[in-house]
Length: 243
Image (tube, rainbow, N blue to C red; front, side, top):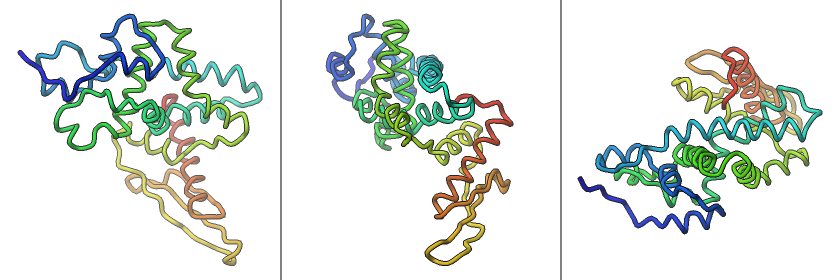
């Protein structure tokens, strides 16, 4: 049975762009196979990237946790967890994948292609995790660690400079979506004080349940604090370590 590739894929160009040379090019290719492509091309012999994604997620979390543990001995367990989550959450990984142009090599079904699948944060983040899994199987842990830390260098530099603030709204949304629950809703509770020195209070709700409240000098800051409270509550209640 024939299968269709949506465009000519040059895996050598892909490897040059990534700065890596795979021994098994089949692993590299698998990292970019979206399940929609298999649905439309049953004769294609490679599996989707989902198993590599599973492996890559675990490796990413380990390497980032190891790096933060070694480099920031003054930080508590909670602070380390927050920073790790901010570095490997879906939006952060999608941003990394976009900078590496991983969307250019995705093998997508026509439907997924037609709905902008190459730019979807979920597809990009999954491809990034799958690439890490493929690299680990092909190159081993040491080379995979070097690759990951090279990509995370800008984020780590911001942490060292004290400028890296976890995006709690993104972290909470990803956690909630992982639980198959509706998107969180933020509501302004009150705004008190003079215009030049207002204090805002906001709350975050999911299915009518208040998960957290926050106070800040702006509506955005109050929502961020509410999201942080929700994230800490959910992580504690569910023993969540992967965000």
